[in-house]
Image (cartoon, rainbow, N blue to C red; front, side, top):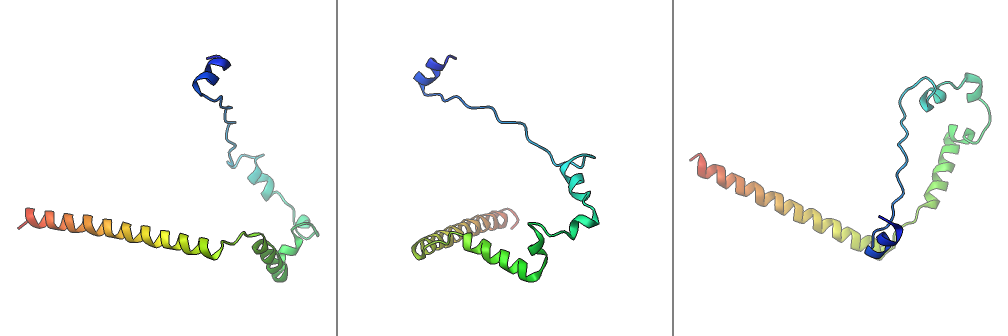
Length: 110
């Protein structure tokens, strides 16, 4: 179809999805490159050096927790009510189906 025709009927052009990359264990793949680190590279100070100590790990954890967008009290309450309601409805539906099958098997195997 032409671009004018697709715009006239409301069809949007979609760009093709690029092929997926794989993480197989090929000799030159990313997993092999990660495992090829020498012992001398592991001891160097670098961007990940502070993560190796317990205090560094704690500092990075606190920094990540400060990035979290925490829900408001109202949002937390409404979403909790929604979860409790859906779990209750699911439990009731499963119980009803269980009772139906129990009744059906009782009718068949008297």
